[in-house]
Image (cartoon, rainbow, N blue to C red; front, side):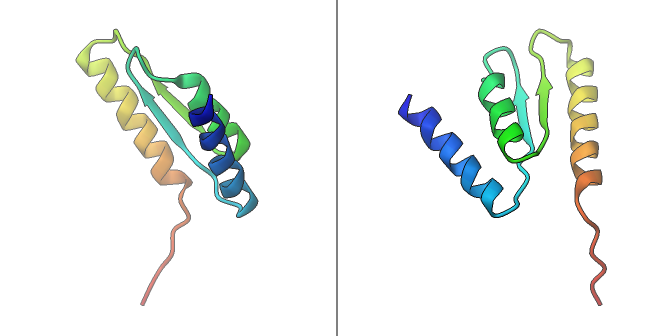
Length: 79
């Protein structure tokens, strides 16, 4: 589709500029295939929080994904 082509085009542009994209798909209706493709193109990571889980499981999965994302960011000390 045109929308998917645009998404992949933007991912390729990000990859060319050495940007890694980390995607987060949440719920039953999430387009995990597209999000995985974007992460793969940019050498990023795709996180999937499946639907149908109870509230605590979703909370725990989201917390882990955000911790992983935060840990992957370079730390810069500024004076």
